[in-house]
Image (cartoon, rainbow over all chains, first blue to last red; front, side, top):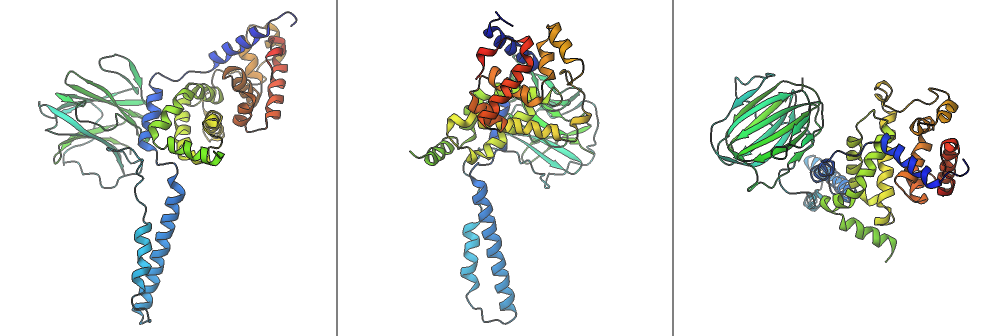
Length: 257
Length: 178
């Protein structure tokens, strides 16, 4: 290859790699940031936490042994009380650096509120709520045997809602018209009329619980009195949408069975 | 300041996910390119990079050498995640991506016909292709290439040289070598 310019070779190689690889989608950096904010535990805590748990377990074992000994008539008077104190002081405290607000727990939450009787899973558009103005105050996700749950909580009543299934996990950002691709292969679009989420809401706008079916939930619009959320699902699934009181909230359960 | 103190300082500065996120942000585009190269279009590169970011955050204490080492350290985590995906159960049954398989047609044919450098790159071994990508595309210095590959700088240099030698009929790169 005499006479060829090495710079051309390098440039050619760069172009080839450019074509062989893909850049991240536009919202990716934001997605990573919110994943970090929501799912990250504090980095340095793990060993301390493990030690604290170990200390607590050891202390509990000591207490148990002492109690058994005392129950059997052993000569242990006030001994158990000082032995119990390490367990109290060593119990792990929540990491102070984790983000505030309603952080979703990736672990299944067993105590999800039961749905009202008569709300059945279906695979078509579901509507409900009342024509009223309300502000979103919290958004949560949870998982229970048989379904994954998405919850929006309001300060007033639940406004008029429409939940529409779709065959892809790509949504259109309200106002800008930009497509947003969520994790998953199918989706549910949750539309709330007469709602707003920009005043008083400080929680996450992108949740990535990575459950079996509910993979991601993202705010896709908060514009002119309409709030929309997109749910990215690992596959097309039937769902039930219903409201609960105290506090007022809209619940969307996605069937996992 | 000792290096341990510097590492502690770095961890403290990145102690909240926001700060860590902004340090990571300039690295994400390259990381996605890296993952899409290694996954050959058969798995979602963005998912893998996101997972690597969470892993990096959780293991921040293992980062040595301060902020300057963040890039190779993070890219090494991404590369390891990709290798893990490739070892996974579904890798072999998933659809093939666009990269031609090694030996799909005669090496010489492809090189002589000339039009397709990508095909030539496709005939390289994966780790060779990766070394070229890190060095020529991401413009990493040799020490960082080595760290991502998990080998010594000397071994990384050899890998790049051998890969270039295989491509040489297609490419004038001699002077760009480390």
